Image 1 (cartoon, rainbow, N blue to C red):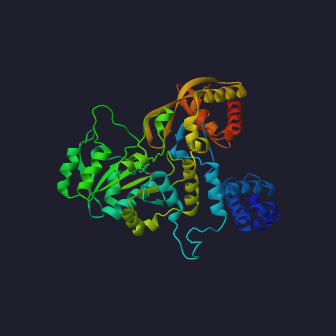
Image 2: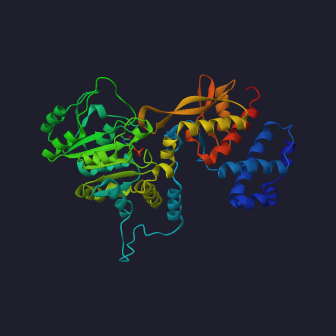
Image 3: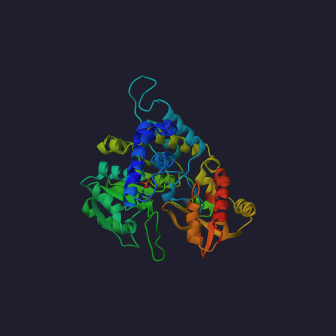
Length: 454
Ligand SMILES: *Cc1c(COP(=O)(O)O)cnc(C)c1O
C-alpha cells in the first residue's frame, strides 16, 4: 500500500504536461491523466510490491490515450486487391477536378440555394440538373444521397399504395441487406410478382395488367447473373406495353454507366442512355459505382414525374449535400468533355493495358528484390459485372504464413490490403494509385523485414 503514497497527484502531473496541453487541449489532457492515474492506482492496489511510476511514465501512457482518442478511425488504405469498386474500401477514388470542386464548396460560402441573377432564394437541385440533361437527354434530373434512397424516394412519390409489377428474375439483394422487395414494401407500394427466377416474358407483364398496376419496375440484378435457360423481354417492349396502359416504367440501373464497358473487354453493362432511349420514364443509379464520382443517387426522367418526386417530403430527408453536388458535377463534366478515361481514376484503372500493368508489377519486384510477376485477374466489384474480370499482371510473394503476412500489411501506415491465393500474397497494380506506389513499396519492405520467417 505504501507505493500508492508515492504516486504523484493529478495536479502535479498536469504541471509537467504543458507539451500535451498545447497539442491536445487542457480538458482532454486532464482526462487522459486522470484515467492513467486511476488505472495505476488499481494496479498498485493489486500488486503492492510494484514501484509507483514516475511522472514521465504516466505522461507517456496519457499521451498514448490522447493519440488514440484523436486519431480518426476512417483512414486511407492502399487497395492492392485488384477489385476496382471495392465497397468496403470506399468504392470510387475521385478525380482531381472532383476533389477540387468539393474542396471549394466546403471552404467557401456558395450559391447553393441562392439565385445570383435575382438575389432571391434558389434551388440546390439545379446544380447537377443541366449537365445530366445534356449527358442523357432526359427532361429533368434530381440528385439525392445515394441510390438506395433514390429507389425509396421514387417509389414513395409515385407508387405509394399502388401496385408495382416486378419480375422474380430481378428480386435481388444488392448487399448490406438492401432487398428490392423490402424497399418496395417500405415505400408503401404493393408488389405484384411475375415470372420465375430464371424467366419472364412479355406475356407475364400483359397478364399483370389485370391487377391494375401503376408501375413496372425493372431492377438491374447488378451483383449476380443467372446463366443457362433464361429469358427477359426487351426493355423497349415492356415500355411500349406500359405506355399503352398509362403505366409508369421505372428502371433501377444500380451502377449507372455512361460508357460501354465492352470496350474494356468486359460484358456490356446496360447504360443510362440505352434505358433512356428505350423510353423508360424514371431511371435511377449510383454516383459512386461505375460512374466514378462521389456517393450519390441520380434520378433522371420525365419532367412531370421528377417534379412530383422533388415535392415529396422524403426528398428533403435524402437530399444531397453541397460538396456532393459540386463533386458530382465535376465528375460528370469529364464525361461531357470526353476525358473520363484520362481523369476519372476508376475508368483509367479499367483502361490500363497489360503492358502497363506488367511494367509496374516488374518494377515492384525489382525494387523489393523479391517476388515474381504472374498473370492474374482484376475484377470490377461494387455489385457490378458479376463473374467478369480483366486480365492483369500481379506481384506474387511467397511467405510462410500468408494470413499473418496479410495482417502485417494491414498494420502498415497506410495499411495495405492484398489477397492470397494458393499460399501466395498477390498484389494487383491496377487498383494501386500511382501516388501510392512509394508508400506501398515502403510498407511491403517493412512487412518483409519484420517477417524473418517468410
Ligand atoms: C448498388 C445498387 C443500389 C444501391 O445503391 P447505393 O448507391 O449503394 O445506395 C440499388 N439498386 C441496385 C440495383 C444497385 O446495384
